[in-house]
Amino acid sequence: MRRGAELSRPQARRIALAAQGFRDPRHSVPTLRTFSRTLARTGVLQVDSVNVLQRAHYVPLFSRMGPYDTTLLTRAAEQRPRRVVEYWAHVQAFMPVELWPVMQHRMEEFRASPRWGEWQRRNHEVVARVLREVGDRGAATARQLDDGAPRSREHWGWNWSEARKALDYLFVSGQLAIAGRTSQFEPVYDLPERVLPAHVLALPVPSREDAVVELVRRAARSHGVATLRCLTDYYRLQLQRGAGQAAARRAVDVLVESGELEPVTIEGWGRPAYLHHEAALPRAVRARALLSPFDPVVWERERTERLFDFSYRIEIYVPADQRRYGYYVLPFLLDDRIVARVDLKADRAGRRLLVQAAFAEPGAPSDTAPELAAELRDLARWLDLDDVVVRERGDLAGPLAAELALGPA
Image 1: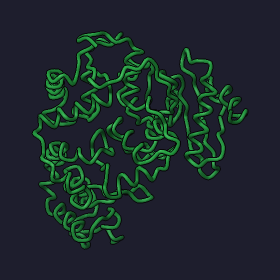
Image 2: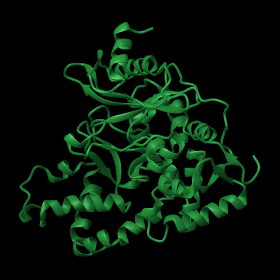
Image 3: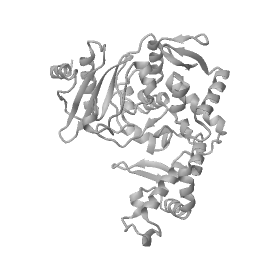
Image 4: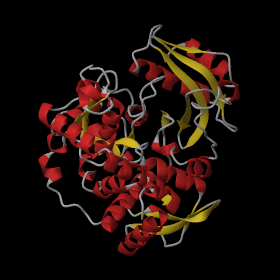
């Protein structure tokens, strides 16, 4: 593609979806190789504790791989050789283990940040005590470290809440890593040398500038085509002191000079954009997927609106009477368009997938209801639920309920 070329909005959508793995064929039985291919596309998997449907880090894998055994992620995160580790990569997220040295500058910035730096200076003794406890006893949750003892100064020498903050500080500053999570979603902390592969810890730490270049490079690969704002947001460079868009812009200049990025424009988007040199531009994307509210495709709201003409807001924290679409609303991707949105809940006790509301987007194709019904059946099967029940809310609820009543095709 020639330098400065203009991409139509459909072209940009297809590039973005292919980069995110929506053109990859689904394997009948996804394996760790399938998982690794998918992670190479998304780069990171955002972690979130909300479990009204399924925890956030599992759903983007389902969206791309189809029904899969969730222990694939557990194996990748907790068994040797570990492939992923949690850190503040976008927000809290699983990232490839080889990013640990790249994140060292972010860890240093957490240590020196106004929030954590002053707190650590006031509480350096409790920080040292907590670090020593983990080092001596091995991997542990905060609850295990507390041992159920009364949370008083007599036990720890400090109030337990300060010791709990020390775990947070030791994690964001890279002095502790998360070795896994319990069934109650509690993080299990351990020393990095007992979590990360030895070859990863032996890797050189890049300079701050080279670290930003690497993160922008990875963001560009995962986006396919992106503006500077998109590239800055993917690994949250705006949260780093001395980084943000200025550092991302310098990284973009480096990558343009090397030929890894190509300046382009996107129809209707009044900002310069950059095309990754390996990005595919397929004639069509045949996708069918429900997108988690924490899926990389919809992270950056302006990008989602510009590419898909889809205005999206997570309404979890909106008072119930002020919600427009529902509590946990997932966009529905069909081919290269977002054509609907559904408010979903897993009723585990009743073994039902509840569709609390279903709304079609303007211009949604005629096969939206049958395709969505098929995807909801796959989702219910993956979640080990027996039935899909549609509530009478939203213009798509009736057609969707009728399709589900017909049974599988």
